[in-house]
Length: 336
Ligand SMILES: NC(=O)c1ccc[n+]([C@@H]2O[C@H](COP(=O)([O-])OP(=O)(O)OC[C@H]3O[C@@H](n4cnc5c(N)ncnc54)[C@H](OP(=O)(O)O)[C@@H]3O)[C@@H](O)[C@H]2O)c1
Image (cartoon, rainbow, N blue to C red):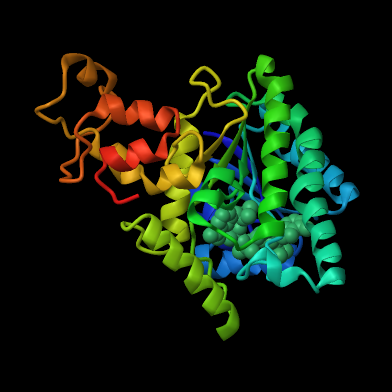
């Protein structure tokens, strides 16, 4: 049985976290939202009665509400503290979501307003959240603080895929990745794992306008050119399943403290590595050309049959480790 506190459970990926985790009656889930009544109505309609779920009010831009939520959570969880704090809630603006940064050049006031809201919500709000809930995390057994970040905040991915959309939003997430590393630098010694995980490209039911759709299709087109196996957005169900599996495997001892990884658990360049995930799996398919030491380095990979398997898992892992993309492309026989 574990105790979870999750922000932004009113919809999207956050609601899916709440749904999957509270399916196990032994888990206790405290969901933080801005609108308690609407969330409770949605839970009742879609999940029925879940006595192990508690919904509390908290707005990431309002410190007092976060403080009250931390105090109320302490009353619910008591001496158990909390095992997982999941910073999922975020402001995801439409302003920069579908177009390049240049399209913002004449939108001075909007850029100022949205940037300020992004900073207050996605960065400062989470800093307050961590400070206020850390005493409860320190009381818990598992001690994992997970921040949901984005592959768009990955500089290598942005440059290599020419991912021009989401500039302001991605910058707020990149700033939060640094904050995660700073918390790790201080609290790793107390056994708290601070980790950023990108959920992948997830369909949460947003409906873009026809104009926005054009920008979105342009981005998807680049992804497909860059990574031909990319099949489009995944469901919240699939994303959350992977993210949970990844945070279960991650540990301070394993070198994950302060890291920024994909929903598939790949270290460094989260989106790029998610894209190459099939090849990582394919590494489990032993090639005749593998040496004994290759096989040793490969022992944790699970076996799948895949004709795209790189010829040498050891070289593949080395390329992944050093994020050597041209080498990865050669090993995987993908045109660069
Ligand atoms: N979907 C994707 O493809 C994708 C990709 C990469 C990363 N992500 C990340 O995944 C997380 C969940 O995103 P999503 O796609 O599920 O988005 P979403 O459907 O827009 O959900 C965002 C959640 O954040 C909450 N929120 C927004 N502003 C808040 C505030 N000031 N205080 C408290 N809560 C606030 C929203 O609550 P309200 O209902 O009150 O607005 C909502 O519950 C975010 O961190 C996002 O950046 C998503």
